[in-house]
Image (tube, rainbow, N blue to C red):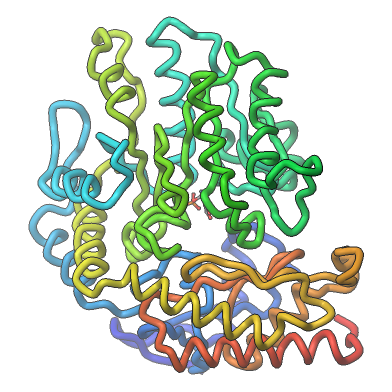
Length: 464
Ligand SMILES: Cc1ncc(COP(=O)(O)O)c(C=O)c1O
């Protein structure tokens, strides 16, 4: 079968494309068994995406938690086209700059945490993590505390797949198959309200945050450079919203021990939680923020790191030979920055951050009514347009399913059969639909999840 696209007919049949893919393409988290019958996506419109066989689905995860404005937005296409034809690339190395990069830095100051003063652009989230960690280490070395190099992170966190970012990541599989993590990365338990049990009488947020202080004291505060956390743990944790008080306490602890607080807003930035950036929910500001994904709604790769005035002043004051020796060819790529500017403008003009909050409430209420009482659902949780449905074999013991029950695979198939694509982890179904999802589409997501859960859990499993 052949089909046609905007750019003309696709030269290969689906079967040929699949064979070529199997022969020559490696995928993120590559495994052939997961890829026997891949979906080949060819077009998208609003909150829906269509495959090469002409089947249209609701894009329940906005691509990879990133296509926040939905598919086919002319404003973003036009911004990219205009910049491509004016100046596709110029270097951003010291001594050069471009108009879109300068204007994006200015615009970001309007929407990001007030503590953040200056920005460095990357191509994605993993290289943003590396940039944050290198910057934290540089900061302490440049200010006479070179032994402050360690990074403390959360279990179940995901920060990317570079060597340093995967060392910070709290899901062990991302490191274990490649050998040990880099030295100097320490992990503490996730503030996972459904599963975290602190000491009796101490509020959960405070108890979970105290584990950071304990780790800093065990390592020696004079050796710890930074604590990195996602405001809501997404891809590793299954949408874990921390308990009230957690981040306020984390901020106090970081200040007490002069540990820089890095907020990984790669998923939670640009309105996804119903605020521009995730920590706003708790009135907390980080020393370093990192972002990617939603900064361009995924239309073109871009990420970045924002630093406080205190950190910027150290970078500015360095002697030339001891400067911040960090650089990516594509830092501040003019086309990516132009798309980000258009993306932020649309979010502002269409007041999408408040729409996210309203749609998110509708989604959670629907899911709670649909599956909240199901014996294999531990809880329905979320914030803004981020939702997680905790999957359990037993509600009493909170025990998860054994791997051989293949619950994620079966749920993914049941959702897909009914017209919804999204991510299903071992512990949770994750949802993060585009900000432009209609009310009817939100209701349809709820119906599909409810039907799929019943189909998988209330009927006997069929062999793989
Ligand atoms: C919180 C977080 N940080 C970092 C990353 C890595 O981003 P990238 O895949 O663009 O390298 C991700 C990707 O999913 C993420 O969710």
